Length: 346
Ligand code: AQP
Image 1 (cartoon, rainbow, N blue to C red):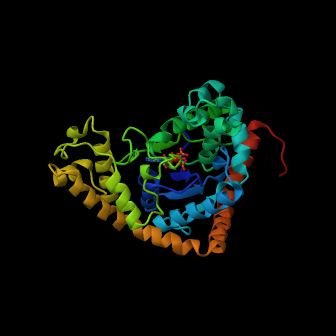
Image 2: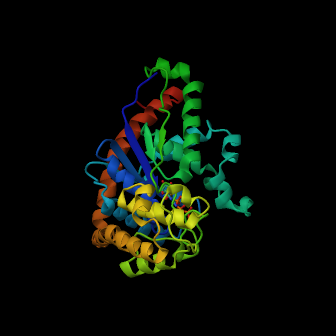
Image 3: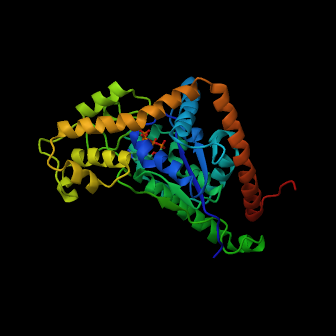
């Protein structure tokens, strides 16, 4: 079996504003991974345009998401930080993978079904092919691990299926070009922690989502302290006190969600939260949650504002990151072309 150096890749779409689910499910863990891994973090603007984006809003959101990454602790010197559309190899490898992936695989993708909704015929071809482009994003860098929220599990399984089929279909050429028995790694999803799936503050059975029409369903990374306090106070709960054991959260999705958010923000387990707050009424627990959320999010919010005051510097950092990403992507794409049998300049 070929061996691959450990490398992390992950990305977020510059659509709307990032929320607490994006932060706890992914971004916070990306920051931690910098300690142990070679990391590449992308603002996936080509994914964003799979649904309509006003161009001026898209430009603003690319800079805002970049600022959020850095304000949360992504260091653009240590990690590679860039926006996807500046590295054209993502689209090139995406095309090859369109020819590797099977229609039957894509037909099973639940996110497409959710996002296309009833008006499926009117969805863009890009929205349907979204998980194929995501596989290209990851495998272009031969990433071995991808930290994501639970909602992305199925897409990562598809990434592994595509890598496996490419490795099998082209096994002879992969060996002949000196890459051993596999060209792409079978990337591991890194999903976990108490906040791998943060739910809506209005409905504990629905994922916290950027596109939820109710702003009270989520805490945005740009929300100020008063807004955070208002949203947590209005968050749906049930009439009972908090349980002392985790199994007492079963069948109580809203309570489970708030406890998970507290645990994610405090870097402790849900059981630790219940050991401290078991028997408390929600009013007291919510007050503690507001203090914690404001304490953790306000410095990020402040740093985002500082960074966004200089958009030219953000653009410069993205160009620099894209140059570093392209250096890796160019090599992979040249090797893929050789394996597939395309003629190219040498
Ligand atoms: N609710 C969530 N809980 C935990 N993790 C989450 N992620 C998203 N929502 C939650 C993770 O955030 C990363 C960014 O993914 P994205 O930018 O592609 O976000 P998204 O899926 O578009 O975000 P939304 O809010 O779900 O957007 P809409 O409303 O457009 O569908 C990923 O790692 C994701 O797992």
